[in-house]
Image 1 (cartoon, rainbow over the protein chains, first blue to last red):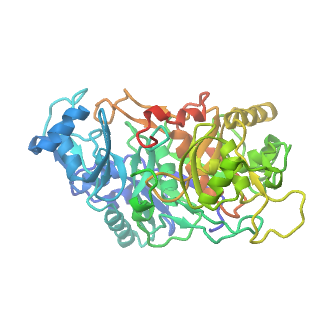
Image 2 (image 1 turned 90 degrees about the vertical axis):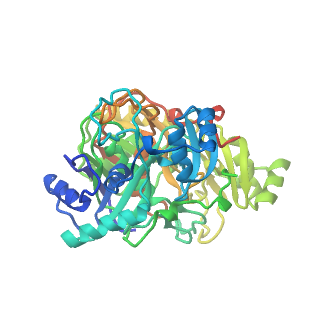
Image 3 (image 1 turned 45 degrees about the vertical axis):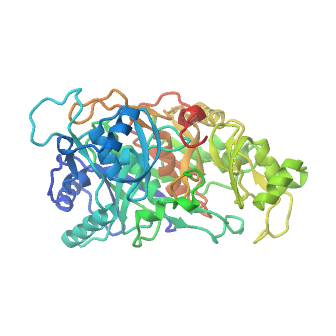
Length: 266
Length: 266
């Protein structure tokens, strides 16, 4: 723990709509300049998964998807688009729970999440001029192929351009067992710990803490998510100063509980 | 959503160790003064559950607890102190899962949490001078009787003394199904929303969001938890400016998923 009493989060203004192939490190450095933020070593950058996926071309036109029989069956059961269900199955290892409009899966990346993290909001039809208001889009957005790798690429790009060593988090919103409301979580990280292991450290009165592991990257993700918002806020990049821990290489996989140690997954 | 691009969190310095009956609003206002923070309407104050419980006298001497037969049986099964298990049972509605050293319950307040939120770290033996290093304490700390009420009392106390209208969150750390690491959550709130309901709002491209509810108080709790830390950081109160939503009366109960709508509780 580094002594720190202030954590300052700033959403970068006027980040443009992102398209496949866009130079995210460059656009983020421009956003920092617009916000008059002088990037420093040990700063963090939290980036919404959606713009990473868009830059990486993870948008998918459902008109090109042929649902399998299994997808058709699940679609009927859950009242979802069979083509979307087909993509959910392709992105998942296992279906854990289903109900109307909701399929909770173990994603191929290890997360337990709804609908395999596939998003149909804030995805524009790239080649189409038809009005979208109120209509179901044919376009959906998949999670990045490898969000840790995406985070490392962004961190490395910033380092190359600005000679500054930052930590990067890629943020998605997950629903939760037992609690209402989605919260921001880290699905990819580079250059910061995912988990802090405090087992063996002493508390205020010199007693040894027995079990405490802190999901620090998820806590930062939730903090950044407050500014990112969910609907039309257009603030997909948040700069964070004052992270009170030493930066190290890390992985969002630290935050995934393997199913053998999970008491609720079955 | 109020336009906001900055969220600033500051831990208040030198909050003293709290004892039963202490004047928390007064101590927090003194801490704000020490930090040169000029409290404003719409600011938030996040307070660690431990100091609320201590001020409310929720410390319990296990030497006065007589375990039931059921508690003895569960203690043998989980290798926990039978007197502690007795208190866990008293604070709970139902045991959901057990394993060595861990009992996951539905707390009488509705949360699903480990060991009924009962904490034995950072609890000093008030009447005893023996050294604590490495020893199991006889003292444990229960959650507040009614954390929403505790939050309202703190909010009202601040308003009476300083004529400022703030939101208050009482923060605990919870483990999670599916993900490693505990994160800060809001177990009591006053004067801010627990849950934001964005269903029916429009996304960037004019499409209606169908399912988004955001656990905004939990996101703020996680943000504050980054500065509070878990071990010896002694930063139990965090001031937050820039919350991008309209304050309203709220309850941490908004964040609790009732078991009938929970796909993983059984």
